[in-house]
Length: 63
Image (tube, rainbow, N blue to C red; front, top):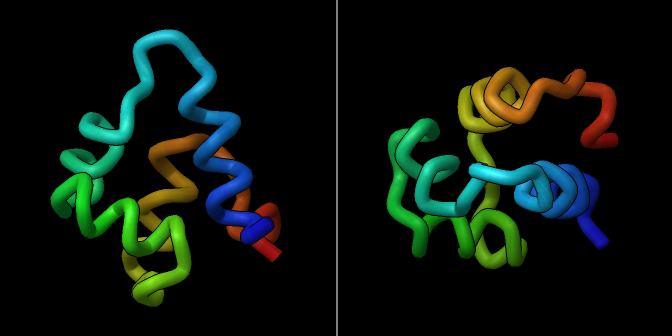
């Protein structure tokens, strides 16, 4: 499993966290977020940096 998808999956298990909220915080649609998480489209560096901040993890956690 992709490390980003794994970390996002764990973040989504926390009460109150949703894909809709995450997508909104990242400035993208839920569909775009799903495409990124499935590996259909690649993450930009800015998106990865923003994601790490939002879900409160280190960039190295995505390696």
